[in-house]
Image 1 (cartoon, rainbow, N blue to C red):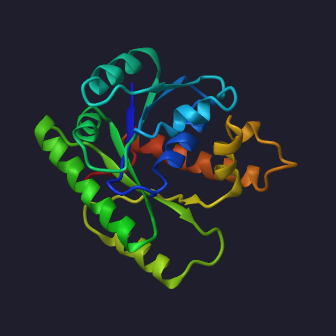
Image 2 (image 1 turned 180 degrees about the horizontal axis):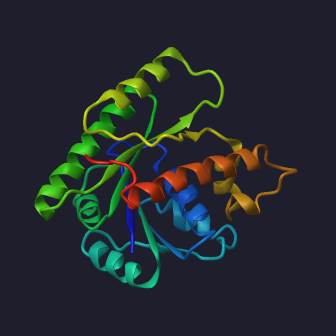
Length: 226
């Protein structure tokens, strides 16, 4: 069963939001276990606000000593296992990457995020060497503007796409009120109240597009190498 890690050595890259949005979307069609391996436990907090979408279960990781067993156990129970890693390089992150079928590296269109994304891709490559296999990885641009982007944002996105050996997921996780609302109300996008939250339908379409490309990568339809 596919194991997908969300990793970036820099905090604030949109990692947890990406993991949650994709987990909720995949759970529309299959069972998903989402492992919260961030010491702050943001996804455990989200799961306690209201009932998660059917098919999605959130579990808390016990840390680097247990993460490999947790991944193995989850993979035996659900078609999809997603792991939200802490925003720093760690042995736990290395263990999770080694067990992953795909590592998604969320990054905002900012210089520090882009550099951290490249550092994380390097860590994925080293983990693959240790495991004696190639671990697919892809950058997901997050919190991007739906309308006009700044020159800096366009430049950083373009530069990442031009780098040899770096795969950037086509659809970007656009900054939407609906994504932020998940962490205050709980549930998934489809459980949000349209009278209280704007742009729910557009957020769902965005999440669906990203999820479809992730499935395509897992099926070998796109090159995604670190």
